[in-house]
Length: 405
Picture 1 (cartoon, rainbow, N blue to C red):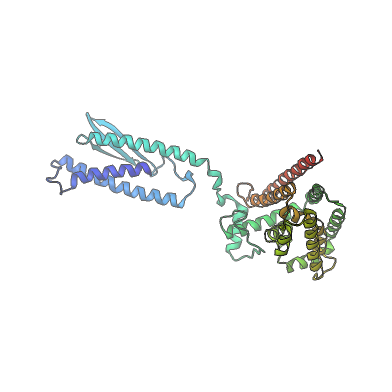
Picture 2 (picture 1 turned 90 degrees about the horizontal axis):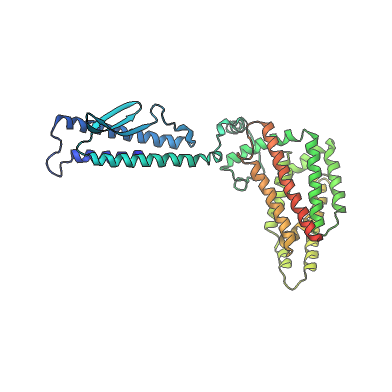
């Protein structure tokens, strides 16, 4: 486009030099030169038309593969040649050649040839650089699973959600987030049809929570008891209707790992930590109190909060009750990690948060996950979960070793 624009500017200047009447007598006096002027005008008109078509092409198609040098209507060749000893310029557009003399302005066209050649080479180099970023602009038209979700949404199909996390997971629009959420739910449902994946998640969660408590110098015994009680509750399918009823009251729209664990439990907990009650921050930030007193006061405040919540439960021994039992063990220490002065524990807590947030971003990424089939998306998400879990485990083990030493 830059080379074409440069050429058009030169041709306009040349045409103006032959047709202007404001500088004296007309320069065109022979039939050959009159024909040349007519050919030049036709050339300028065709060049402007080509420029408009190219602009529309680049507006409609982000992918540079739509530009193919050598195809009909998609190339422009400008070259200097000699005809019967007279220098001429040849322009080829859509396999049609326009040839005209340059004896009266040979130097201008030599400069034109040099400028256009340089610009064209630069343009090709720019295209090669742009190809490096092609992976960031996936061809969503070739992603059947995502397209099916999009068609379902556009046809009025319901894709319920509890919270829009479009910006957090770096989706380009709310519609993209909702359609990807639909795909992720299908993939997670397929993933946990295999018992091995369910057992892996249960074992990994137990290990991570235990290591976090141990790092914080806490006894994990009560946590492990509450965790096993939760697993027993989940494995009993008779509890599922009641569990769905409980969670629906909390705004949870689907019984998937994303909706329950990632969105409702973990991300809401992180959101709460971003806006702790003023009574809590007042205690934690009080420089006159010892760290031990601050931690005890914070733990008491968290336990009091869960005690109050328990009194409002509709099902005393349901899913939420089991969830609170686990939270009572892990939440005080996590709160102390995020809000307290222990830099080591703070680092662990923030690392855990970054890994969970990173997992969500990867799950909603066209580059990290294949939104082509349910099976492929399920495989990619499972691998992402394992990679993040390995990273958390390695971080905890490394820091535990440093504490022991």
